[in-house]
Image: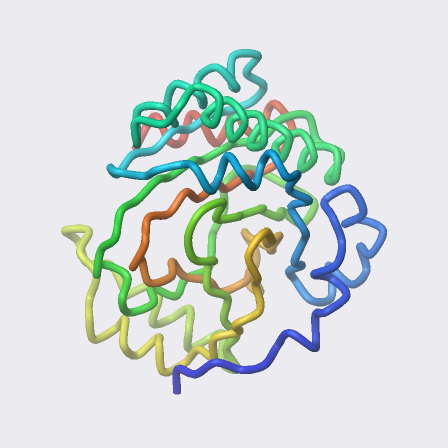
Length: 247
């Protein structure tokens, strides 16, 4: 059944670290498949996020290394809620900082950054449990960092029968790209939700693996500013960019 479990105690130590210290517990990350990290927000960053308004749905993607990223993010954030240049620039700089820290943490050259803003909707009232598949060619485990800077945390789940979960997942989306509600409910019955992420934290989790972490969008009952950062080599991120452009 779909239920919350007190997983906080199991991963308490992982939630007390930063991106800069993440890989000092690499063996733990490898075993658990995910880790919680403190965003280490400054007083000014907290204030800027508190000031931000999200009034429309939108998104921004950046592939590789972009010297104009902060400027592009600032413009994007100003437009989605008539936000001040000062607050938008502070949040844009925060996102850029997190991109840099993810690169350093995983010893990589580049990232794929996704920024998504959303307004309240009932679209995600039922979890859409899934695992992230292949992004690019890799010989080492691939991890992704996600964090809601505003709004609810990404849901994480665990499943005792991953083989059944994957079999159901293959039937989740029909040929028209629509979600099959009955399959969605069947997946919910297979997953136990872990309510572990706290405000001002991000989550690093394994992707592109049979044991990739199961996760879902949360209920969107308030505005949300969400970022996802996938680290990789320049060639890997370019490979993923080409795939996205072909779709």
